[in-house]
Image (cartoon, rainbow, N blue to C red; front, side, top):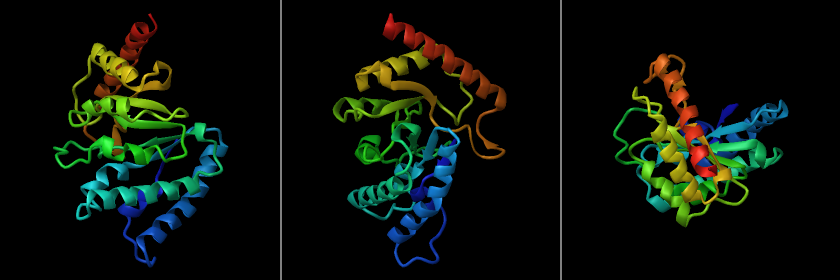
Length: 230
């Protein structure tokens, strides 16, 4: 079950009442904690959707330096950690991305720049996009910035903003590469880059193609498992 992060909620909705941006973000965290706890109490895995980690470098924080942006994201994570403090880490995933839109993504912040910030989250898994043409190579970052031992990685191996159906062998190649980069095949899982629809009725991919992509995802994961486990 997905829920928005405090940081992305704060960048998406203009602050009209709080003296500082930081106090606004922590107020968001306090309000969202009730939603997080409610989801977790029903036994769901809670996925925190936090595209602020990527998209807001060229959005809300476009006039700030990279160090200032990183500092802001660390504050976002600190607020999130307060909000999820009562939920076991292995019941929470953190999803970050660069926006589920069909655009050039020319000004995206590289994943390696924000990966250390994501590692500060008290969660059991990251969900990251590595199928799109702008960020697929960044899976290599896990070789030099190892995934923390308590975390697993859901690897985006299927794009969600186009109508190409990835071949199962392409999916398998991406998963095998991810396994080698992470260094532990038991801590990766196949996933999509993002959701197929950010808003109801607003999608780039037709419904029949979505199902075809999911079928390819399953077949590709089976091929990767066969190769990795022999």
